[in-house]
Length: 75
Image 1 (cartoon, rainbow, N blue to C red):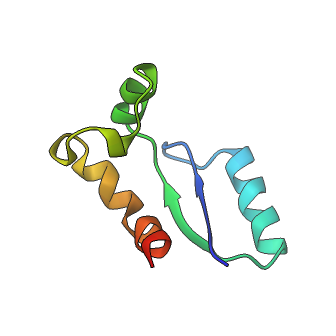
Image 2: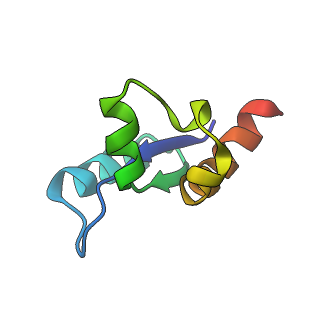
């Protein structure tokens, strides 16, 4: 099983993100992908939408982050 989790962007990882990665590693679970939030996420969430409910040209960069996850789910 592979696991993905969302992590806040910034120059340095947060302590919470580091602890989460340590915990997941201690379980022996490989991380599929780290997802970095963007302004699109904020604006879409405020409107009750997801990346998958708007035109792909508006969220192209976000969708690229999700590609490994959607590929696995679609398999």
